[in-house]
Structure formats: C-alpha cells, structure tokens
Image (cartoon, rainbow, N blue to C red; front, side, top):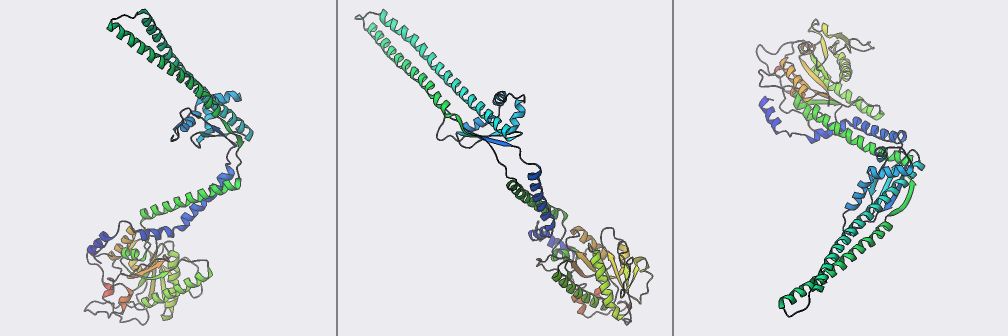
Length: 513
C-alpha cells in the first residue's frame, strides 16, 4: 500500500470511530465495573461511618398581608431568606440561653418553602432533644419577628393615613371659617366664591372619611395576619433508617462511580488511541490478521476452546515455516508469555522434520533462562543467533515493544509473524513497527491477534498485500537469473529457491506498511 493511498483512506476516515470507541470501552469493563463497585462500597461506608446528625423538623404557617392567588412564591422565599439572619438566630439563642454565636447557629438549620404559606424548618443538634428545643425556639423567634414586622407595617400605614386625615381636617376648619365670615349678598362674584367653598368643604369631608376608614382597615387586617401565623406542626425528631440510608447512598455511589468510570474509560480510549478492531490493527501494521487466539480463561469450556484454537494456530504456523525458504521469527507486542508458548508448541511441531533451535530474543531471556522439560526444543539466547549454522532450522522469538534493538531482528529471522495483543500498542507505535520492519527488509507474513474482541465483526485482511499474506504462498514463485537465494533452512531443504514475492520490500520512502 502506498503513502498516497494511506493518506486518502485517512482523510476519508471519520474523526471519531464510534464502533472502535464502544469496543475499547467495553474491553475496559473491569475498570468501570471496579469504579462502580468502589462507588457502591464508598456510599455504603459513608452511611455507616458518617451517620447524619440528630435532626428535628417543624412547620410554620405564615400569613402575609399581601397574599395573592397568583403569587409565584416570592413571599415565602423572602421568609426563608429572613430565617437565615442573625436577628432571628440571635433571638432563638437568647430564648435558649445559649452562648453560641448566631453565625455558627445559622449553619445548623435551614428553611424550605413547601407552599406559598407553609415554611418547613430543619434544625440539627447534638441530640434529638436538643434539636427539637432549637427547632421550637427558632420557630417561635420567626413567628414573633413576623408578627412584629406585620404590626409595625400596619401601624406605620395607619399613622400615615391618620396624619393625612388630620391635615385635611385642619384645612376643613379653615374652609368652614371662611364660609362663616362671608354673608350672602347680591354680588354674583361673592355667590360663586361661596359655592366653591362649599364644594371644597364637601370634598374634604369625603376624603377625611375615606382616610379614617383606610386607617381602620389597616389596623383591622393585622389581627388576621397575627392569628394566621402559627406553628402548625410541632417539632419532631427525624428518624433515620440505617439500612435505607445505606441503600440510598450505595445506589447513588454506584451510579456516580459507573458514570465516572465510563467517562474516564472513554476519554482514556480517545487519548491513548490504541487500536482494537482487526481492520485498524491490520491497517496500521500493513499486514493481514491471519489467526486469532483468545485470552486465557479459568472456565473449563473456554479452556478447551482456547486449546483447540492454539492447536489450529500451531498447525497453520508450522505449515508456513515448512514452506518458507527463509528463517521465520515470531515478534510479540504486549503478549510475551503467549508468544513463548506459541513458539515452543511450533518448535515441537517442527521437530518431526528435524532438529529445531529456538532463538530467544525476548527481554530477560524468558525462554533461554527457563528450566527445560522433556520434549522441549533447544533454546539459545539471541547472542548466539549469528553464530548458528545456516543449515539448521531455527525459529526466532523476539519483541517489537518500545526499546527494541531493531537491527538485531534480522538475526532472528528474515521473515516474521507479528503476535500482537489487541488494544496494547498505540496507532503511532504500530506505524513505527511497520516502518522499522520495512527498513530492516523483514517482510511481515501476517498478524496473530491475541485477545480479540469477541464481538468484532470487522475484516482484518489487506487485499492488496499478496506479497506477504499467507494466501499468496500458493502462487508459483517466479524465477529470475541471479535472484532467488538458495538458503537451506533445515534437512531436506537444499536447492529450495526463495520466492520473489517474499523478498519484495519498499524501495523508497513512498511505499510503507
């Protein structure tokens, strides 16, 4: 595949692949399930270790002189705000004969407007008796303050109306005096003046009567407000059920932990950019997925399925190595243990054709340092790979993880099978692996995918990669003069010509995969 083709496919790819995102998040189900369980346990532990303090509740019916049927709740919100004032808190503490500061006491209670005229007061304390006493004192202080404010408002309004009435009465006395000082005569102008005075006296008399009635009404409405503002529900302690509280907190913690875990998993998946689907891994490595091997499991039926899949993989790889004119290596990425097991099983299968030597290039001498078992092939370290005879059948095992010595990979095998764990390497590192192998002129036969997603239905085949895919082995190798090396790869392999397609590698920086 050329670089131009890769650029076109990258440009046509969506910015965010939802399928890959869902698969990657589902593969991290252990993480977000653990987060959900952690939230569950933390919520339950909070209910047990941090029980709510003793709480008392009381309800107060609040009457307002400005009550309207269409009131949106402004008046009751004002009452809630007035409840949270140092004046009411100080009055309640004074009735309790407490030396606590009003500012500190205000943190222990709160008000809630249930309706336009019903106020609920919630108070906490060191005990149920103390909480109930504080709630009673607070409710009494609020009722007394509300009544006092109502009376002061009514008295102020009535006083203003009476003052206005008194000013008009004084003006009326002056009008009456002016009428008494004038005697009726035949002068038309004097008659008109007297008539205007009489009209003014009638107007003043009417307004004086009106102001008197309004002052009386202002005082008359106050007793209704005073009588209507009262404690309708005596303070009572709130009973807390520990099982119910623990269950509620656990459910809340479960939901919060699950949401947080899913969010972290999704963000981590997008940021890490670790391909999981077959098509993504094949596209980034530039090689087809030729086989898969499920992750090991403790379940009996899955063990049998994994054993059968491992046997099929060993048979397929053995057929590939027997038909290859060059040494083949297994290079792992994120699955060193599985690669070691696959390499030993493959070496045992090839032992029927002659002696097989496994070259261990894994970090830490995972194979060379192990204790051999009966029937195991010969395992040598990577340092001895260059000194081995070309007549001997060998199978290299190495790694393409970060920190790999790329120039040493050619001593493990001039052709390779990549054993990659799904979701382990980032897209950038897979590109690096493909580029480094191309620079070392090591063709990739295919990819063995470890721990694939069981719900992945994507195709991991690159249909333009016949020069490296296993299906291309059925093509007749072309013979060219002076090409096609005669490398002996074991007993009975003399005179075998290297296929031209197996030696094809990019000649410039314009072809990479």
